[in-house]
Image (cartoon, rainbow, N blue to C red; front, top):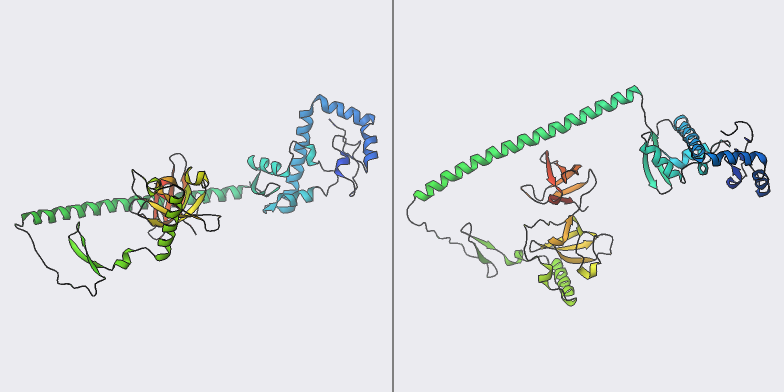
Length: 376
């Protein structure tokens, strides 16, 4: 073990770190003084001890540095959230401190991450060279308060789940009653003999309004053909992208799915592109948001981070994007399709997430493919 008295001299504020000997705890003023020190018998003796057991001395210096750092953090900043560099600046004001380059950590951020993993402090990374640290209050009052908060959150979550289950039960009961009423109506209709005829004496206001027959519901509806067309700006963009694809030798049949699944894409959702053939994979794994949907399965996607660059792509080459906890999402499938909610939690074991729909006070658990991040 190194001597506690010999070589422990106060360093000058103008002295350079490269002239400091951690093993002897001695600060030299210049290159000549440092060279003279390293050739001294005492230094040679200390270095022989170091080479006999380098792991011991490295761990010793690391523990000393950690103890001094935590002491400054607790005494100077209490339980406040503060930058690691600010604490380090206070630490090095003591000229007899253990230098960071004498420890097992090469960067201050590595040290901050290490004590954060040990649960000694709360650590939040700022960049590669700094991060926020905060002492963890381990007093009995703080532990009791944390337990009460966890218990309250657990109870709130249980209430939401129970409420969601009750809503689903009520919905199923209402659906059964509705199905029963429909069966009775169908039986009454089957008892009626002969066809039913009727005539609608409705005349269009002008020739531009054409009758459209809805065969499934057997009713006539007057619809202005202008309402059936997409906005002129979106239609021009669609035709432009279609022309660019044909110019590159990509037909619409190549873009459109041959065997289509149920349509899930919706406007204003963020998606990830998984097409490695479109423009030689230029957009692979890039994110974009859907500006418009053409024919249920084809999306006009604007690439995020580009200068409004848009592409025409089929939904089979897109993936949903899961936001951070608390981010807004859109439900893509089921009876709640198109509704906006907030992501409460993520369950990686079964690849699903809990989404809270505030307008209906409803909490849903849906797989990753049934919701995606909302473009804001």
